[in-house]
Image (cartoon, rainbow, N blue to C red; front, side, top):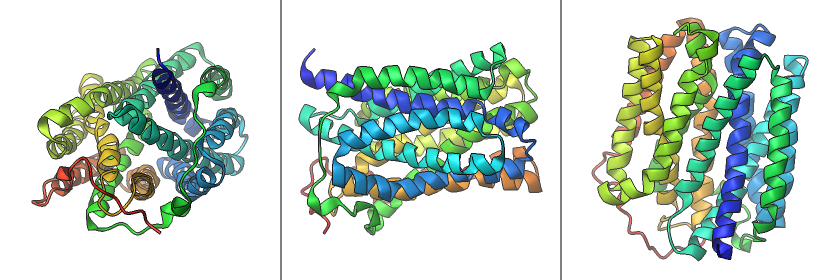
Length: 390
């Protein structure tokens, strides 16, 4: 195995670690809700703080990578991210849980920006598209984390004990892979990249990513609650929908690049929006374990391509360098993560969870509509001379 391949494996291990930690948190959200006896609206408010931290973390991550280089940000961020997870399970009250979730969100997005910066640089060195495969590993870790979560629930372990085990696994991954993470600094003109204003085409990409992240965030945070309260699944099957979603999202990301190359990116994103909408509609109209599981299965396939293709398209912007465009799309799309999960809770309080999921199904059609405009942004030539933003 040559050095580039070793670096790809090591970087993939870090993407896997981040996905494992996030999925471990998501798998125990119903237990967190039960621990503090939260209503859907109260849970929605609580869930608001993690993506809020993610948005706060974007400019911090951009500045840190510019100032210190991506390697040191990855290493410090990874250790802090792993150690923060058990604090979520140990928090004795919601007042203490809130700042922990904000910190967890900040660290998660710090890892997101620094790892994707590394991935873009490695793509350039390898001369081929590999970004979607890293996102696939993140999703595969989510599938693994959901499975571990189901096992921990079956064994009767508390979230704190569960998260402690995941922290131990995380440090094994960090220590094993850290030597191949390269030292890289952003150019001096990109230090304030998250504050740039997007042009019309990049805004459209960002809105598509926004809707995709909103659907993704809702599935992460509410799939277990939906199976528990609407589907009324057996306790041992509560994580089944989440596992189905994460499994198809992970596998879909490993084949996204090949499918997009054959059928065009615009076609893949159009179909993705339809799959998300159809899958959620099935879960709403037929809230049984088999039909809801199949619906979440379709949603996973739909969500799979949205973020990787959005990042890939953003990297071909005619006006911005890839890192600037990536930060713009990440900033806007994470507001989907910010608004989606708490919105589900607020609507559920006013009506019910089925109505909430139905509204997400309708919003997913916006992905198809935005990608169906005559002047498709997805047909930008693969190699475009960029002008660095000042």
